[in-house]
Image (cartoon, rainbow, N blue to C red; front, side):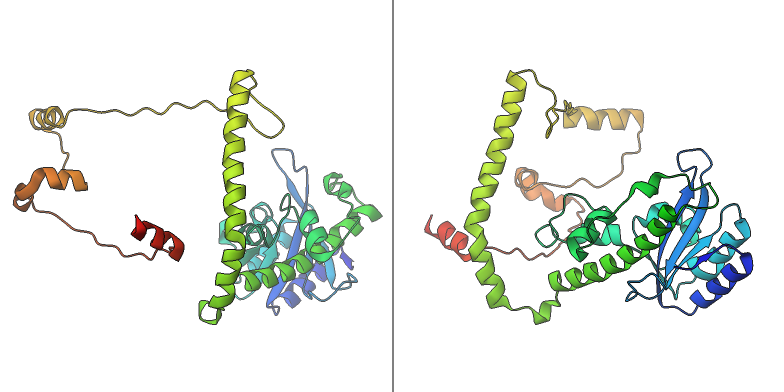
Length: 306
């Protein structure tokens, strides 16, 4: 857990990081609620197997724009180095913003994993570290502490280096889940997939039916009892307005006003039927698209019986 405060040592470690393939990064920001937040610390880990914190370096960059600029130039814009963050959009604002390349965000990774594989109440790093990696008793109080103060407290330093360890371990587990949940289609066991599908099909139908029914009952009850919000739901009023006009009137208006309304109109099946042979007098463009639809065989046989 080396805490570097001198420019020479920080430049030196940044130069070392240029040789890394992947690094895990976190930041702490001073005055984060103000109009001018300032980068206080950059925490970096280059060894995901390190659980002791020996390879977590805390770079003190408060009010040292040259150090931050060097980190951006050497690390953040380097496409050959993968930079892993949690909620990357926040940290990257202070580290190159749109110039940054090869960024991995564990928050976005987690959101893409199906809920049945990652059933979590939220995607905070603390939650993911607890659920995926069995890190318990994670103290986040220092997160909102005063990162302007110097020297930093022991609690702040401990918090800063631990977040990088959590991040690296969460990243590793998310990649494993991603791989398990998205195997190569050619390697899939279709028999096992079909068996699993039939196992949960009826259960899903029952739950989905109850879910939709409960939503409707809750909506009606809230309306009847004049309740606009509960601990789980909020009734939101919205107005959908559809503007209709007679086609002949519209065509006459366009012609009389000389409006440029030259764009294609999609002809529905009904319009095509109404036009009949007259359709041949139109210069039409036909867009054809093919897609595959997965249909359970029992549905197919039921429709044939009807």
